[in-house]
Length: 238
Image (cartoon, rainbow, N blue to C red; front, side):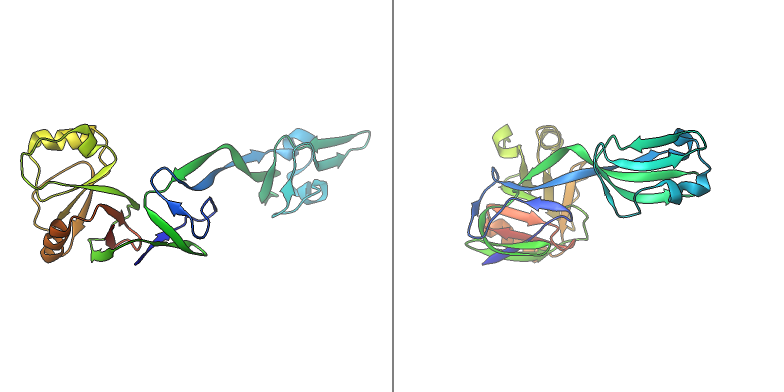
């Protein structure tokens, strides 16, 4: 069986075909972007409408730190502007005499795998992960996209420990107030339930559309899940 996993846009994928992955495996790195505006007309003292004459670059060009970006030849002197950053020219404003650069932020964020299995295929924007058994179930539409281990609440009011909760997706029909407070403060990822659940919880709440699916999952007790592959479904697998 295979489950699909989306790859975010502009992400550097760390996984390879055939690789076995778990929750400690780096998944991808996505560099943050930030913008900076440079007031060249003010810095070099020229009329804003002359910016295209002064510039040595156009929109879409890359700029390296220390590279000559603009040069203004006045009557008695020549003024130059050398870039202080690496970036990409996103906009030239001839009314203000400014340019906007898109920069790669100094830091980047590495996301760990929130799924387990073996990488079976890598396509543009998606990978397929081979697992032992998997089933897909309908949910209410969700913008959330994550996964992890599942902890099942078999009996209401059963004692819950931090090991039961931390980084787990909690599956159940209802919670008493004490357990609700526990799972909200001890690092649970989400609460998975069905349409008729009375629980009002601050965590991410994933709602199964069919009671029959809820009963099936509760019986099978799949150890893992992945949520939001297509914004309206959840995969349970082992």
